[in-house]
Every structure is written in C-alpha cells, then in structure tokens.
Image 1: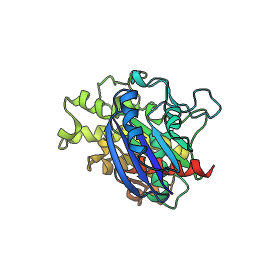
Image 2: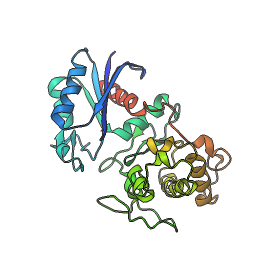
Image 3: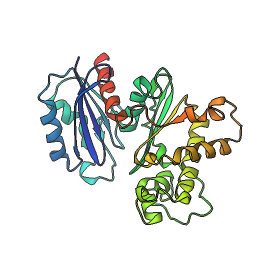
Image 4: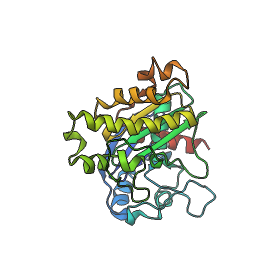
Length: 291
C-alpha cells in the first residue's frame, strides 16, 4: 500500500509518500504561504503517485466533527488567509480517496505511539514547544478528542517570581504559550533562544513553566509517556531542568518510579526526531483506509 502524508504547519508544509509501516519513501517541504500557492504545491507532489489514502495533520484550530458542515476546515487561526479554509475538501476534490484528518500534534502523538518513543504503549502525550505550544494525546489507543481537539498550549500557569514579561498570546496574554513559546523567549530576553544557550536563568524559567503544564497533564491524563518536541526542546540543557521541576511540583503525591527514579525515561524527546508529525500523518491515512 502507498500512503500520502501532509504535515500542515503554520510555518511550513511537509508532504511525504510512505508505506503502512511508517517508512518514508519520498518527502518534500516548502513554506506555508497563502492557501492557493501552498496547496498547488501539495497537489503537484501527490499527483505523481497512485495513493491508497492521504493523512493530514494540520495546524489549528480545526473542525474535527464529521457531522459539522465545516468538517475538515481550519477555523479561527490567526493566519488570516487560512481562516475557514476547507483543507480536507480541497485535497479530496483532487484525490477522491480516504482522507484522515487531525491536528499536527495529535498526528505526532500517533506516530510516536506506534513506532516512536511510546511504541508498545496505549497512552502517551506529545507536546511541541516552538513557535507555538500544542499537545496531542493517545488515550487507551485512541487519539484524544471531545467537544474539539486538545488545546493544551493555552492553559494558565503560575508566574515565575522573577518574570515581568506580559506574555504575547493574542487571546490570553500570559498562558503557557504566551510565556514559554519561542517568540516569548525572544521578546523577554531580547534574542532568539539559540543565542541564549549559556544563560541558565533563561532555561530555568522555561523549565519552570513547562513543568507546571506537565504536572497538570500528568494529574489529569496520566499518560504512560510524555514526549517533548519542537525547536525550543533542541536546547539539551532544558530537559534535566524539567525533570527536576516536575518532581519538585508533584512532591511525591503521585508515587511511581516513572515520576521519580526513572523520570528521565518517562519525559523524553521524540523517538522519531523531527519526523513524528509526518509519520503520524501517514498513520492517519492508514486509519482512514481501514474505516
């Protein structure tokens, strides 16, 4: 079988061709510009292949309610040219085959749960910390979805005692994303995170915010593995600080070795490195074909 995958990110689109095992045969990427220009490139790439199904993991918010008239659309995104864009229908108009659809972070969680860091587990949480913050979850083998998809990047966290930064989320100002995403780091400290590697106070504050979020996710979802991806997590000094703060915040209230002596095996970076989202998109295609 041959599957197509689309990782539709706010900054770039990644398209790939692969098989049912998540093995990528061919992949391209290009900047996310306006819908027509971007989707023309998507269609040009896929029309060379005889595909069985396509999976799409998209930036959001998106409509995942299959009974909704706007199912398959990107909805209230701040990327104004993509607002209310019918992404699934556009692809289906050109390729009348099964189309799987979910958020980019849910797709990444799916990929990691099948062949990545959470392989063999029926539960995991994938969080990307980069230009924005988003999270997807697999619970009892299924992608988490209720009224809508999770928006865990916008939870509220306590302020670090030394942080006077207002936050930059256009909706909530000082939510997790507004305080801890890449643009917030740059605005607060005056430089991109990649230039701040040796500033301990930068990463201590970042870990403080991320650990608070992880504590809440652990207490609510109880995932069997937490995977932290995205550009900010390229800072290798960050994850030990997160481990330290999570243990401190939980304070042994939830008493499992995964949250104490084995926390370095519980909160980890992606097993699929930078391929979690696109591999997960191909597994969305496989799931769509099986329906």
